[in-house]
Length: 241
Image 1 (tube, rainbow, N blue to C red):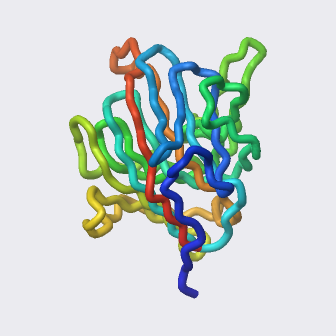
Image 2 (image 1 turned 120 degrees about the vertical axis):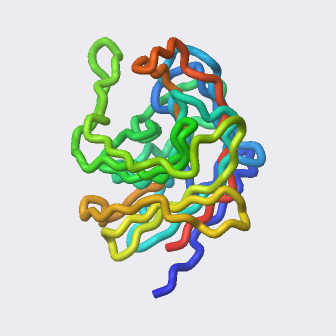
Image 3 (image 1 turned 135 degrees about the horizontal axis):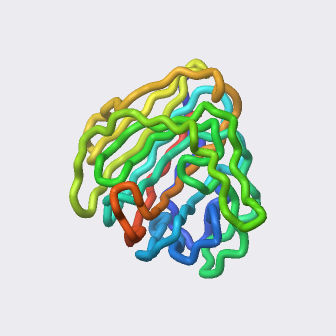
């Protein structure tokens, strides 16, 4: 059966469409979101881990394809974003547009809430596939520190990088026959899609939610002391199902 277009979204604003719910992973004041001719996720330079974005409200079943256009201002170490499939249901309350973070949820964490599989643009390295087939779910401890759920994260080889300066392009994520996942990319609207990588798993064969999120963090293992300033704009989302 041929797939049909089920949702298109340019994030024109000022509110999210009813297809999405949006918010922040934590209460970091270093990230702000706005919906204005695109979903804009802005990061101030700082020292905090910060992640935010949107997740589809209703579960998506069966075969699908989803694509997303992006512009990233500062693709450097300590910054990444993704179009991912997750199984954890998001909260229905949306906290954008808002300058005050009144709520937070783990589904808005890049690489969080496993199991997941993602089409992502990582740092300055380009496009890659990411996945986590574990069942470890993170949470907040008594001191307000996050107990990480990313110990089983895996990543494929990055393609079409490295990049320097403002970069635009497209992410695509698709599922076929319930278990066959494919990540594709392209730089320009008129380019042919390039397959980045693929995975086969039964863990994500059932209903999933789509997540569009971005983050920054201090990358201590390379000697960084700050999380970078950055801005990611998402637009031209399309879902076939």
